Image (cartoon, rainbow, N blue to C red; front, side, top):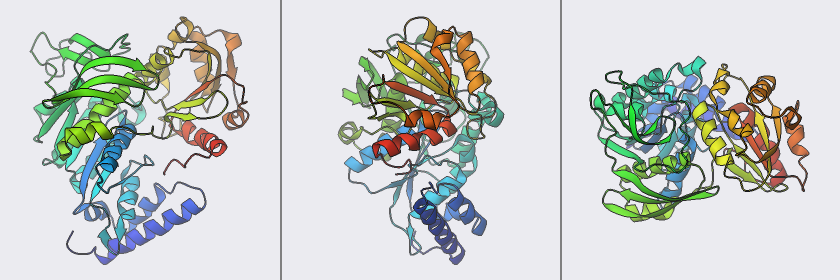
Length: 456
């Protein structure tokens, strides 16, 4: 950006930043309202603020926040100044607010941005931001009342990529839906994926059982989870593309991380993925692919891919024997959480918090596609299950039908009060909330432990 911003854009940034500062002084996040006010003053603000900034944009159903945290960790290690929407405010207003916070005296302070973008919002944002790198994590059935079926989400992501044709598009090769974008998008392409079977993989319900080209049912050389893996169509020949960033061996899957062998181009070496569960291997791969496309060398990437979990995403709180919070929002993610819980080596209590607010999705029928029967099959060492949220009764019913013994089920009317009362000698507690439930419960835990606010 060689010239300063137009007067209207500078005024919009001033309104945005003053509002944000005031809200945070009041203990509020200030993530969306400031951006909404700024856009009213200057509707073209995102395009103006993105000029001269190298942007890595991350989108997809699951994993956006964690992948962004990993990208940011490597940029920190490389000594590259950047800004990011760490709060997870990924709609147009939230992204605008983050862009505005980078402006001083009409000019950008930092010239690199890592921006998480909602799949639907990216449709309009992409052409305005003109990202240098666009990385897509996966496409799963999620918030049917908002996104519709997976093909609609895929269409939104396709439109976004075509709106920024110069952006290098990093795609999950193991996701047959995302991989198909290589057939229609004009962007430079990079693929990433897991090239080996995952030990004890639990596939769950497939959101893409049939070939997107001819409709024939896919077959798999191996699976990782959900519909991800080495897919191929025996009818038309469409199959998993060959990735440039790939996990070639999984040595260990643990609660606190995984040991893998990672290939970046021709460079192959061990890597410690700092967070547990298979989906965090994919999050690391998405981050590595984006950084590789951005021009960061393989050695710096390997040394820097370590990040504290995003707020509410496998976040640990030192209360009693330990409290862990794991955000869930769709069947694919919840299924992976159940696999993760099966690896606990000691008894623990479980708290499921189900809300149906706009940010969660009004349709909660998805809980019936989660294989909660695993809790009753003896492979998960839970002792008590506490249920709360605006739709806590429905979650209780689902758990009852899954075979969880009634004496172990407890309906909690006030989840915040429950967490304030967790005793020092209690068993480890795992909280599995939907988004707005997480946003209500996390401050209680953060206050008790002196942890940072979610936007920090």
